[in-house]
Length: 109
Image 1 (cartoon, rainbow, N blue to C red):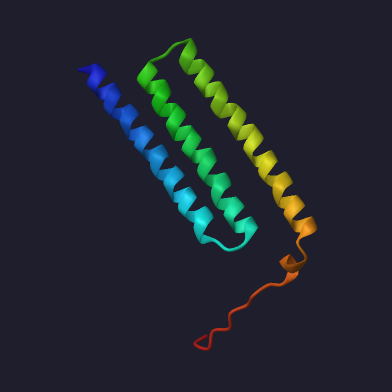
Image 2: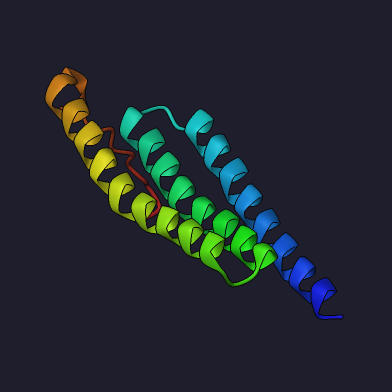
């Protein structure tokens, strides 16, 4: 009985990770500006990787393989924000149109 519960919890985490990855892919394709697309991708990969690797660790059970999977999550959590910051900084420094801000005026306020 515990194998079925572990499989169900693992499948739930894997499906949640897949849902996060799909929503991040939709966000990357929907947004127009590079910084918005990068923000959607950065949030999606951080949370999606967590759910996927947690699902794999639960499926595998406690052991050395699960420890290595959790180290992968730790590496992604440390490397992804730094890489995203470096790419966004490069985008800000090289894009001349980034300073133009579109403001929508609402008449009902």
